[in-house]
Length: 312
Image 1 (spheres, helix red, strand yellow):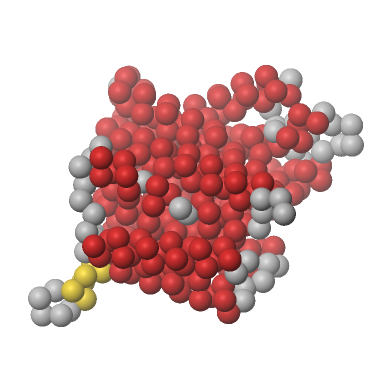
Image 2: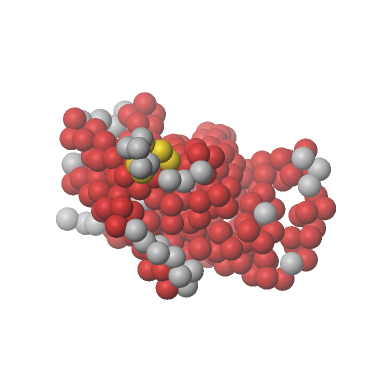
């Protein structure tokens, strides 16, 4: 059996581990909104150059109105809403818990796939979702001395993490629909390189729309001065550039490539392994301690992720 989509999804999880690390660093230094504007501007530039080199066309060639419509919608849901929540989530609860809450993406993708793509949801899939959510609950809830249940993390950070997971899961499904329209729009005589680079061309469309969305928000909030300060911050720009490479350029493009070869639910599930991968650098570099309860929560969450994969 060909597991191309699954292998690519694992590479995405690795890429997003680095992306989460650099996103946290950049957001804390120059702000989440400024970081999003800069990274999507850089992503647009890098992807344009990449398409120019590989296909001879520095733009999403052959993309029709339907492809633009669905990919633009996926950018608004996944980038503008989802990443706005995610980057602010990092500031409040850190990348480790932020990525843990992103495991909500597989259930969100499954539900969106049911309504948008007509994919099925079985009772086994529901069980996998329940186990995943139970693992998250173990990680973010704790008991007080008088046996009351309370949140062990700031509520705002948790809600932002939930929003980020929903944004990513739904955005991934919308991207899959957009790429299907894009692939159908390719003429029979289109260069083979264009078909291979279609996920990168699709990501370029999403980056353009995402940049426009975040820039509009910054402009409305009259924070253009902060944007200028962020651009002049060399350390912040270094983090934002690395974030761009591991995030929108390779991570997101590979995620779109993954859903071409695997079901959205399976791909999203394997991409959700980032919380496990991010533990080691968080402990070694940030000197963070992992409590037994957190380990149990992550273990149960990953069990749910595994069940989700096995039951597809």
